[in-house]
Image: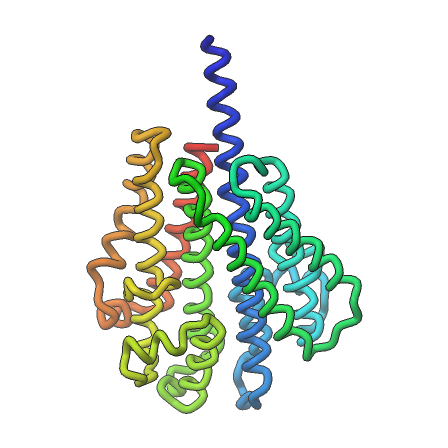
Amino acid sequence: RIHGFWRIDLMLSRTAENLYWISRYLERAESMARLLDVGYRMSLFPSMKGFHSEWESVLSAAGVKSGYLSKYDKIEQSKVQDYLFFDKDNPSSVFNCVLNARNNALVVRTSFTREAWLAINQTYREILEFKKEDYSLSDIPRFTEWTIQNVNMFRGAVSSLLRNDGYHFLFLGSFIERADNSARLLDVKYYVLLPSSTHVGGNLDNLQWSVLLRSLSSFRAFRWAYDGDITSSKIADFFILNNDCSRSLSFCVNKIVSHLNGLKCSSEKVSDIYNGLKNVHESVQGNTIESIIDKGLHEYVGDFIMNINNLDQNIQKQFF
């Protein structure tokens, strides 16, 4: 009997792990696509002398710059786009994310709806066809839009799932990945893409923020929330502290806490995980954007990324 219960517990753990990684891989695929869209849109505008390449910034935000430079000598638009979307040597490419999500979904097909499985499998079959095509730089907007649409199709398909532990692990993975990616996007815009503080608030700065908002499908939401006045501090507030922005750090942390509290499998493990998250949760609830900027936005975001990575490791250690 004890052995039987142990096997059931092990099966539940493996199911939870697969669901956790399905959502993380699909969220990462969407983030790579949005990063590509940011780079593509910004590449359409002339760069000022002395500025970092927007494609170098995109690689830095994606966390794959070292991997790219180990394969290629120069940072070129066509190579960066292929590396982020199709390259099998890049673990975070859209292609690999879709492949890994499908491989995990194959193991737990009975744990979510038929529509959710079809959404993942259709995405996989279509990206295989894309990979066979001869594509040009102008095809990137089509690829990025396709990725975003298909990930959203999966999200819609899982909305009818039972709100059990499997559901909560699925969305834990999604919001942990989104929190990390939102923080990296914010950091690369503020610290890498615009390297000189003298340009903050200038035309190029505001243009880059506008492109970032549009690529995250948040331009109209921001204008609605802040009366249309685009400033760096307001956009930083939007992406860090605004509880109504679905990609803000605050929103993601609140969702992580909510899904942790929804788990019924082990209250002791949940309490231990939350204790490690408590400071981050209090930080995004109790800070003002002025205090964050005074401390240093880059330092704040760097600490946040480190804490989210620690949270991810703690969840995997405790449950998987």
